[in-house]
Length: 153
Length: 153
DNA sequence: CGCATTTATATCGCGCGCGATAAATATTTA
DNA sequence: TAAATATTTATCGCGCGCGATATAAATGCG
Image (cartoon, rainbow over all chains, first blue to last red; front, side):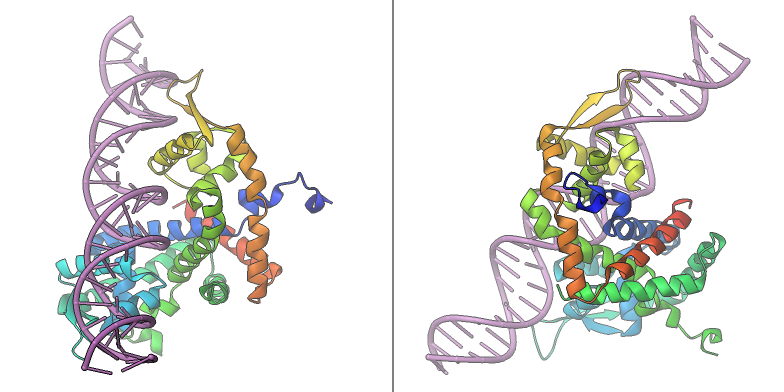
């Protein structure tokens, strides 16, 4: 009756947690992206931001933050750095002066081609480690379920 | 033949990535922990560090970093903050003067009881959202596989 | 033994990530 | 219409997370 013993803290062990593997996996994945993103001169959150804009060329700060499940105070300075790099442009909304429209520049649009090969390289690397695409697909779907459950917190 | 079209960037869409759900799930989980950890006055990485020490009361900086898959330059300042809070003590190794031994204080040991209820609360919250324990267990095991594959990068 | 190399920890700089707060614009409501 | 409220973005402070680098102690090797 391990789990009923009040002095038993097994549920507090690192290996019995869900939170730690998610946290660790996230950092390991970002590390794996690093060399490829270094070649492009961008960071991982910047890469995600560009991915959003590659799907829709112009969005407000709020819309981007919402897509990435980030707060606007995280991406506001990030977007300013992307602007300095000439990857995006920023302009106030015409209809609503509060909004800031973020648009891809030609340079930002062009980076999509350079980035295009990265996911394939990473999946190939994982296959070499014995992680099949179907397993990764399964994992992705389960994570989407988890996110859907948690995003409403 | 979508995937053979050179102008097709579907694999760069956020929703088709594995990296983003892992990254987002990690942050959402940390957010869910936040109110409980605020009550204890610690951050999420500090909580993980204490979990390691609750399993083994005295460890070197390197051993803790290795367990958490973090670099020592991340946890060195973190451990100093835990020391200021009187949750751990730091002392040089006797046999090897380079090592810094991190030990739980009575206060740090006592916090385990307060933390003990947190995982149950979170799992209960997830069950309310329709995420069963067996699904979470499955997810955890898959993530362990992914981490094992990636940690060797 | 003397010197190069390795190991363990610490320091520094930068980019997040987010709570708290502020400032400006838009909307609602009295 | 005037005042209260809400929305959108920005600013600030702090704690990571990590690459690059430094420092000191231990180890290896001729």
